[in-house]
Image 1: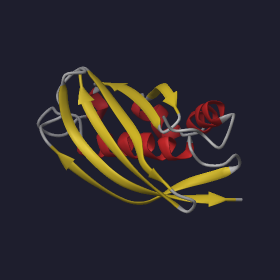
Image 2: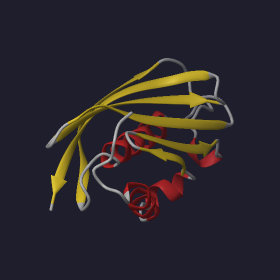
Image 3: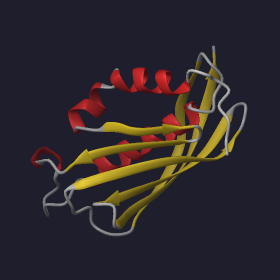
Length: 140
């Protein structure tokens, strides 16, 4: 099990997430925070669809990016910030369903960079996408 270097990591993450107006626009909510893992859920909304009626890839990518970033932040020292350095996403099937779950997990936490993986699920049964992301840890 991974251990956080910030005893208040869950509160820090929830407070930071609450300031993200874009996540609110997408209807995303954090449902689980653990050291090295963050889960964010959102629902199907008419304003989130692409031309074929699937959730737009940009929506899933944005929420996966946040899940991975907050997973990295959960292991960062108190007072640190996290910014995305890079990511890659593979979409495995169209994003169709009613409830979507983005799970970010830390693979390797470092002092400056943290490597994460993300999974996007539809209705807890269909794996929609996989992300690999590198997060930059910025200590103030």
